[in-house]
Image (cartoon, rainbow, N blue to C red; front, side, top):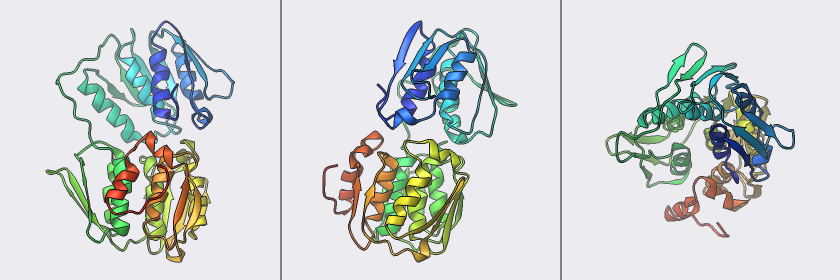
Length: 345
């Protein structure tokens, strides 16, 4: 049972294909609506069996192996997790896996992180003209007794936004070590929008203070998880903020493009949604209190919560418990910064 975790399900699809026998993968209602068909097709190309039990390309899934490796084609514009799953499994197959990416690779930094971690655990990979190759016959091994997990910049983004929007005294976020994470771009995004922000690489801290922000055009092709954070920054910025290259952000726990557009409108923010673009008109935004729908999505809940720090009235968000997916302590941390929060978290 993968519950609400799309990452878990997608990584387990290729892992389950390594073993003899059938593995069934299930998830909650949200996860059962997310697309898995192209990764299932990849497993079939490699000689395994992979089916959507309800024949809709989504969970519940039945995976049967073992695969021996081979060549596979997979799109890169739906989820980089498809490529990550195959890379992680490829090294322990007999023949290895050659991955041809048939479309633009969105969220490439996540693949870069995968390769970096695989290297740390003894798995060799190679970039090719059209994708990646993982030689077979390898085994996982750690060269060091301790692996230091870097801080998660997706989660940091909400605290940094809180500092930029509401903290006269500044917010200091620790654990910000240099990383291949694409979401570390939030530091430059905030800086480019006019935030008073400083990243001390030696101390691994980021300090940000309340600032007047200006609208900007921001490409989230490689940083889809930042869209909700950027949207709330745009709601408070002068001028308009345009988030582009975001069609793949519609295939998350919810359609985050539509979700942020619709929920911001409830707060009095003018938005314009297009297939691959979201425009937020911050200058005309009164930012009133409202009852909002968290859409069962941890990132929607956390981003909208930050606007409650500066809205003219209280913001009530349904589904606050979903922050447990990635940041269970989120509301406790906000309280420690001085936020007034009521209800069950």
